[in-house]
Image (cartoon, rainbow, N blue to C red):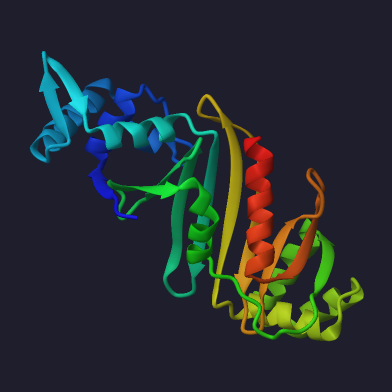
Length: 261
């Protein structure tokens, strides 16, 4: 996949070059200094750094950026789709992955530190594969599929119980909602001691603004992964289902097709 790591000042040069007021998934207030003088100073520093790296040259008094960098900047500034993915690793903390799509091109952005932006080109056709590298969900037990529907407040109450070692009470609530005892125990175990968790938001964008979206959460347990999403678009009810790679792939691909069409 390759890629390049930019300092905040270098990244601001790219954003200025494509006149981007912000970037989906990043807080504009944290990204761009409110003070105009500070902003200009950072951009000047970024121009100097990029010039020293050979990524920017001056032609007839005009700053000319490397074509790959300017291409990635244009995708970040005006994507058709943005995909925001988090991975939560117990004992380590969350990791953030941002993907931006425009036509057949996708750009991945990660933040190695508070003042660094790593950009890399990703094939749009390979984006779902990349998401599965980040969240490698799998079903290992080969058994039946499990499903339960809960109101949002009920789900979060069950999750809190599982995390606070009230597993029996959480299991009982799930069984009362129609889940099998075995499925309920596996879900509670996954929420109690997850191998990893995460979320994916697929967002349709117009002129750099989010206009529609779909989102899900996942948690990987010992036996299987679990996927949590709205039972229906706009519904306050959540559908919780056991999940494998194929079902995750199909759902994300469907959302990308739906929101980019």
